[in-house]
Image (tube, rainbow, N blue to C red):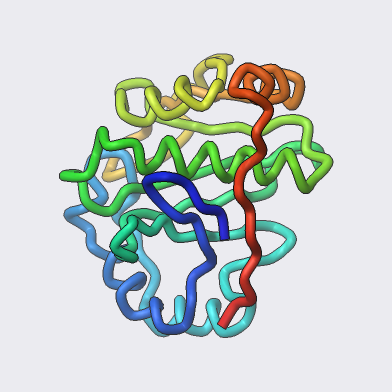
Length: 191
């Protein structure tokens, strides 16, 4: 579990599963930047029972507010090389946008990944016009590298995405400027 001032980033628990499935599969909350494809609840339950949404290839966390409500999801997964990871995120309730939940959750995860692994590069991919996601990337220290033209098919059309990256030396420099204080990281067993 990764604890911040606004939120906690933690693994999904069995007790969360029904709520989580409903939040993930709520198509109207996906907006313009997420696919309208969804998995059946049975498929999601089976996958959760097999690995708790955590494997060598990917790891899923929920973002929980101080009142212990699930407000978003955060993942990291394999990218093109073994020294890279891609990060993805989604806030479930857009009325919470701009309050810092996703930025803090990403910062906690970034610190955790660089503290406990050999990864040298983290990436985020976002639609160039998704200003909220671009702000998260920039606040977390990521640098825009370029555009992948028509790389994703979302809601009936092809979309460009901007690739953002954060390298370990850049993270180390940012961490030093924040006072070198590591994240408060506590692992809890999955249930």
